[in-house]
Amino acid sequence: MKDLIALLQPERRIEIVDVGAADLEHGQKPPYMPLVQAGAARVTGFEPNPDEFAKLPQTENRRYLPYALGQGGQAQLYITQTPGFCSTLAPNADVAALIHGFSGHMALRDRLGVDTQRLDDLDQIAAVDFLKIDIQGGETAVFTGGQAKLARCLAVQTEVAFWPFYENQPSFADQDRALQALGLQFFAMQSVNRFPLAGVPPRLRRQSRRRDAGPWVDGDALYIRQIAQWPGLSTSELQHLLLLLACVTTALSAVCYLADLLQARGALGAAEVRQLQDIVAAGGGAGAA
Image (cartoon, rainbow, N blue to C red; front, top):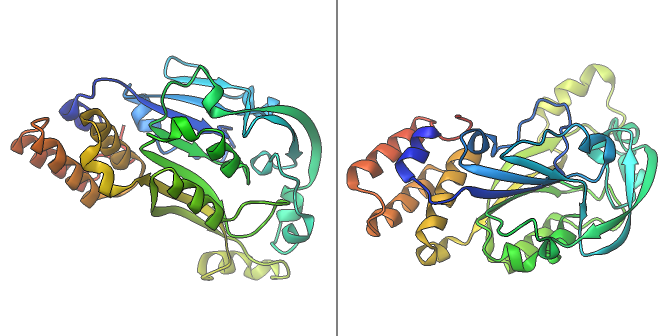
């Protein structure tokens, strides 16, 4: 990653917003972390669960705020047995009971009254280059409350649901419509979670989860600024998008196209483009600090 940054020499840091930034103790590092560790990005995260917020480290390149984002106004934060299932939407117990183990994960421990904040109203956020969001059904409310700042967003990684585990939970299709309206297009599924249905005997659960084609429960979808718009992006935006794609996913052809656009503007030479291509092709972007 440091080699790519040195080649591109972006003028400013990439501004990342992480909504639902809790460290869920699963050993999962955010996909953008190599950029933050290399000093090329700064993250502003939001986590309204007080217990989870207290675990988040505040550093020069990582700042966290205890806000629930949405469309503004009051809401209930439902605190579940497993923190990763907390939401401003009420758990749907009937649906949770259909998937092995979910009733326990989603059992209600507490509920807190919160005032949701609109992303567009926050002075702490001047720009959003990359949005990572995972808040169990509240995603479209954040998109609605952040339309102005997300109008120039380069990429969004959002958790999408294929099952309505919460009351009135927006679907994958609902999120897709909202993000397309912001000029973003679906690029890839970063991950998909499959879980066995209730009733699978213990001796077969692991096999079911590893081998069954479904059911798909949820996953992380990556959206990017519409590719047809790339020639109209600024040089800085092209550099940032290239670094983001090289870091958070596997997108060699997209990176090559972005490098060609930068070369046409004189921002990269032919030798630098070849070097950049080789770095990404060798895996020197994604997950590399």
